[in-house]
Image (tube, rainbow, N blue to C red; front, side, top):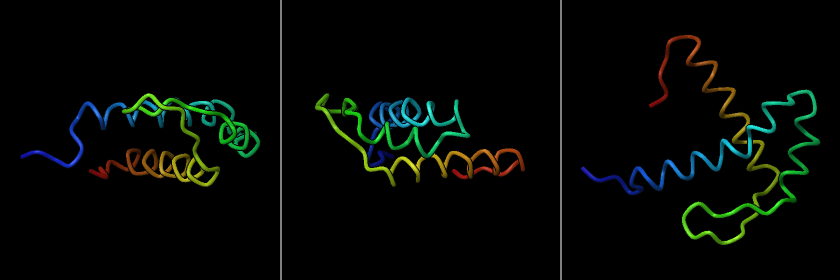
Length: 80
């Protein structure tokens, strides 16, 4: 069964999100300042290659979801 987003596209989006929040994860004590800087930066859209910027709150949501996912994984639960 095909999903709406095929695996290569989904993987490209996942790599982009990780590339962005990886900087936040590396410096958690300055995550707010770093998120502001990352939000002002242009990124390459994973499907079209066009420049794209993400809103500060989008980056915050990705950061929060990563932490939530880590919590569930530590407890042996799977979110999929």
